[in-house]
Image 1 (cartoon, rainbow, N blue to C red):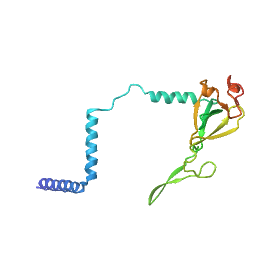
Image 2 (tube, one colour):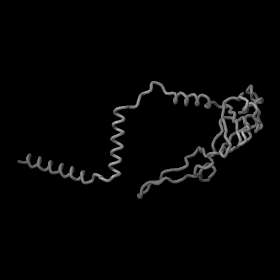
Image 3 (spheres, helix red, strand yellow):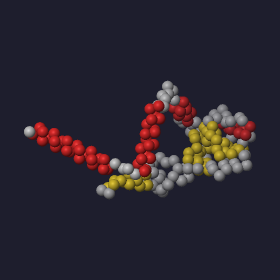
Image 4 (tube, helix red, strand yellow):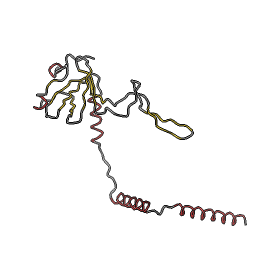
Length: 192
């Protein structure tokens, strides 16, 4: 008798749960469209599963980038093109850095009884940043260590290379900083 009662109670609980779940189901047109998209996606994945690569050219390119720029004393050749199509260049220690890059976190998560909130933190100079100045770059001259800063956008672009370029537009570029390509061609004059 106890077993029959338990089975009856379990069946009643399962039925109640199923009816409750059915009542919670969203029959809105948005829900129907979402289900249709998901069903279509599921069918496409079943018919056309994503292929598997044996080799990643993207990972190779990233590793080559690391190999190229991950050395102390590496020089960069920054060619800037203005709105008139004229080129100038800087020779810099390392790569130019966007002004919005920071060594410290720019935000943190505060938790209290009301939940979590992301709050801004001050930068190294004690000020706050909203990610602005990402179109402004800075770096240091290859031989003198002089600070240099430039902005891109509004008809000004820059091209970064790890060696001097010989193509005509670059070869005729005007020297914009203290160091010329000739000053560092053989690696001499580079300060650490």
